[in-house]
Figure 1 (cartoon, helix red, strand yellow):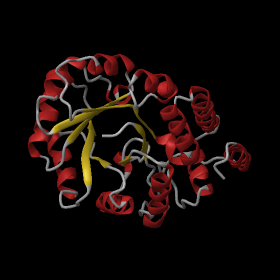
Figure 2: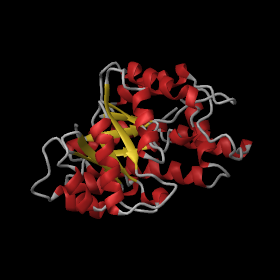
Figure 3: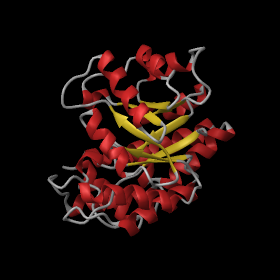
Figure 4: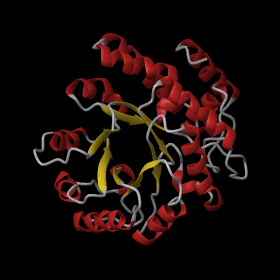
Length: 293
């Protein structure tokens, strides 16, 4: 996978949870135009565990089609057991154009490292698509240890890891036995510019979905060695995120930002509090300030 920014897409839905296909197409097209190196459909920002079963396949199918092969598309398949994740994979198994499937470890019960090894090995054995590990200890309550990753990457159908743990990234990057086709994707947005300069240069986050112009500018600057411009762009993205966090619902604030970009529907979880007109005005003002609208 190429270096650059990878966008965790939001999943737009109607009030009843019905997928807004046209909105997703608009979102994907904006990301492709901005120069995204890849897309993650139905990750954390895409609310994968909350999507109606009846809509799951539609989200994957429409998103892959909208990308038109211009960048790789990863699809989230997270669930709480091997059997349930394999069911997810089977739901999308006949969709051509999926680069790989991505899953956290099971999150309802805490996993040990041997459990994690067993889990991913079973997925890799069963999946038509390459499997990507998703290290999300803040949710799963257990990290994927570097030593476990080093065992797992020996499986020919395990092709990468998404992790926000910089120590894990550094250990794996320096490992001499890392397969050439194993991609390390970093997901701690606060450190993206510094990490990129060290060579940890595949960076994934959901904030890129509502800041395509700024993200594109940032990674063009990083590629050109213009750290000052890149840092300013990242500061803008982080400031927008922090603004979202001052509202009762980050995802409803994010929804407003996405709506401003022409992506209709809700990107929030259905039981979350709404935000005020003042919150919307502040988000609108900031989106205009950073040049996204």
